[in-house]
Length: 126
Image 1: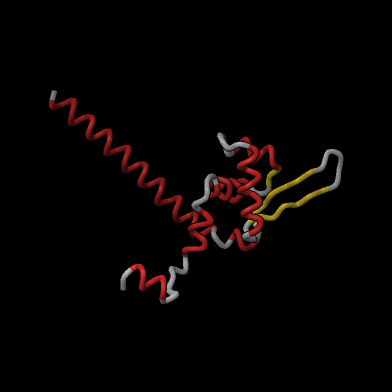
Image 2: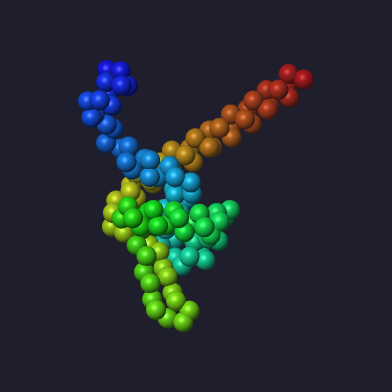
């Protein structure tokens, strides 16, 4: 089936929605931090997701909240206290993200070893 026929038939990949949402900038890093460290206030999360701007973090958190993956708890104290955490729906990704993290770490180690081996081969050839 061609791509055009595939689109016209209404067939779609059932993972497309989740993958498109998780592919957004900083999204996996945010979910990883909430999954690993639990509920966090905005400032703490911003420190852990180094390099993200406050504007982008706010945007991504709103998107994740809208998708039902992140919960925003607001306490009307002075100053106001806002805490972000994964919802039960967000925690449904724990197993998948854990497996993906395991594969990523293994691939990084394999790639680092391959670079070291290649460097050693190049040195030996000199």
